[in-house]
Amino acid sequence: MSDVITWTGVQSRRLKELGVDLETCPVNFSTPVERNKLFQQIEKKEVRSQRAKLSEFLARGKKSHLELLKEKISLTLHNQGFYRVTTPTIITKTALAKMTIDENHPLFHQVCWINEKQCLRPMLAPNLYSLMMDLGRLNHRPIRFFEMGPCFRNESDGARHNYEFTMLNLVEMGLAKEDRHARLEELASIVAAASGLTDFQFESEDSKVYGSTLDIVAGHEKIEVASGAMGPHPLDAAWGITDTWVGMGFGIERLLMVSRGDTTIGKWGKSLSYLNGIRLNSI
Ligand code: ATP
Ligand code: MG
Image 1 (tube, rainbow, N blue to C red):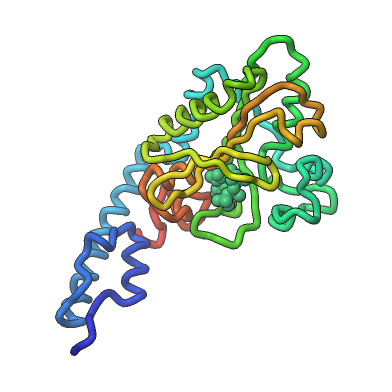
Image 2 (image 1 turned 120 degrees about the vertical axis):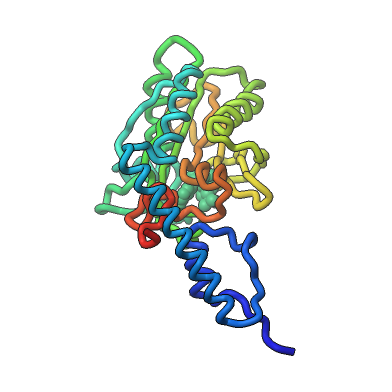
């Protein structure tokens, strides 16, 4: 029996890079010449189309998919009565320790330290906890706010993790205890709808940092796009929080990846190799 002639490793990598769905391409060829000819045709066509797309974006000064998604989510949350906060990207070791993230915690070793006492935040929660404590002194309830900004984690899996990514974290304080679960699902669904995400499920998980969490997983691969938590919570005392609350953290690039039907995140993160999902060495 003769060997099956299919794409070479280099060819299939290049086709994927160009955004070609290999499942819709022929996979078996009678000769290498036939295969190479088709490869060249597809590559030429894709390069032309990617170049045209990029020119269109640049010439018209269009917004990137990531920018549009951030704007849409922000507007949606403002319309739901959430105030947007912007807090420092550099946080202290003490603030992390208040989240129980110290030398003994696995996340501690993923933290990007800039000196002995400060790091680039791996999450928004420490800053948002601090705001919850201060805003909790106001009389009105509920108190609603969110942050959307960069977080950093030294990760080993590159397919669904970026070293630097955009986290959205929303918080609602002062709701009835019995309403927390339903409200968390409602808020999660609002953000999912704003992101064009239709195929998702809720999953409960035990987190080392947050106790019991409510995750959103998307698609048949069940890719996590968000994790939610609620208080009263074991961490509240360290921050002087006595209110009931719900909170949820989303990865914006993950939302973009999943809502666009991708299973890898690289092209949607901050990058010098991609512009709006288009590989720059393809043009
Ligand atoms: P995972 O298990 O997928 O690594 P996590 O549970 O460690 O995620 P959380 O701390 O729950 O992540 O952060 C909230 C959300 O932020 C995640 O659901 C995910 O969408 C996103 N996120 C976390 N780490 C990254 C990363 N390195 N790159 C991109 N998005 C991330
Ligand atoms: Mg999580």
